[in-house]
Length: 173
Image (tube, rainbow, N blue to C red):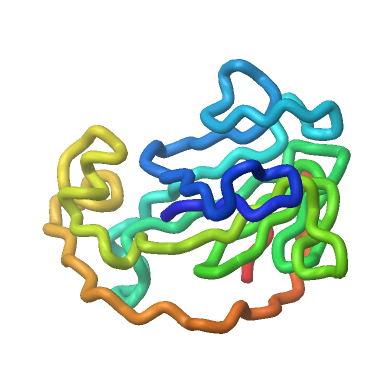
């Protein structure tokens, strides 16, 4: 997947951030993959994690899912819904991510992104390359993973209510 930068403080509209690592950090710290120099942004504002699916999971689902973990008390919003510090949400294609303010309102958030999901187009070998392992998906069943055919992306942005399960838990949609 990738992020398109769309925030009000973005100097280059639709700048692309490729998510090619198992973990991608966005925040103020020098160790973040995407550094943002704004005091209202947390040292590690969000953690994006590529999650490898197992062989026994739904055959129609992509080999990877992208999870967003909110590490900020200043606010992270997905489709205008606050995620909440310590909570996680699975990102879907065209999700809007806003730091400190939601996207889609009269005023753009200072830092905002649109998530583009290409994970269903990855072959097992490409997934393995991301994780530095063998093409077998799942952790050891030895069964060969199947390639997923590309599926069209929805043109409209879906509005989905995000409801935390628990602090430090996982949000599922």
